Image 1: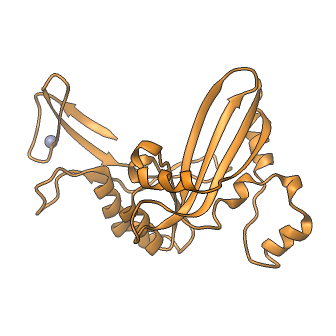
Image 2 (image 1 turned 60 degrees about the vertical axis):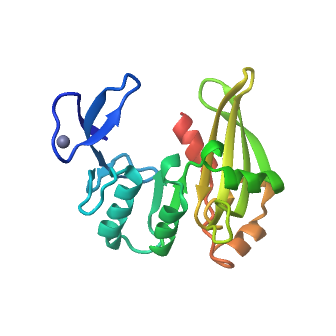
Image 3 (image 1 turned 180 degrees about the vertical axis):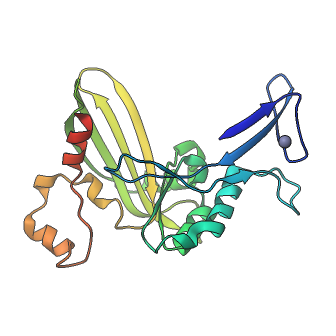
Length: 230
Ligand SMILES: [Zn+2]
């Protein structure tokens, strides 16, 4: 969040940005994490982390570095495997994903093809799982199509962290393409149930995967979606 931007007023802590006309803008920004919970109407604001040049660093500060500092400072407040960190494409990079994994938490970041060349090269060589269903959004019908793959390197290189990838492609029943969402998740268990038709999985299989078997948490999103759309 940018809370100061000026071409005239500046201080030693300002970040600078040069626009397309060559003019310098002086800014102050902060990373402002929010805590949200499904089915919970309140949003809690957490401690901000200022995006400002750090002592001993000549380079300008950035959101990624601020996110790392925030995690170093505050992650002890959360019990292991209790939080999923959400973020845009900017945060879907190996060092940050590794840091969150080392902290025994989850992440769910957007990872677009043009900024994740290595990951999408892997995806092109793999057979992706897919599934689709009709969803009524309250006004018109949509086709939701998922494609996903588990346990895939998130970048090129032998030391690449492995994560899950999922794409949700929503099309209007009568019109053309609407939107496409890409995500990557940290742990192989985390996203799997997102893409399975309820009637494709038997009670016996649910028991085997769930608390009586492998300990997976099985979520049924269809009721949540229906409530959300109404
Ligand atoms: Zn300033």
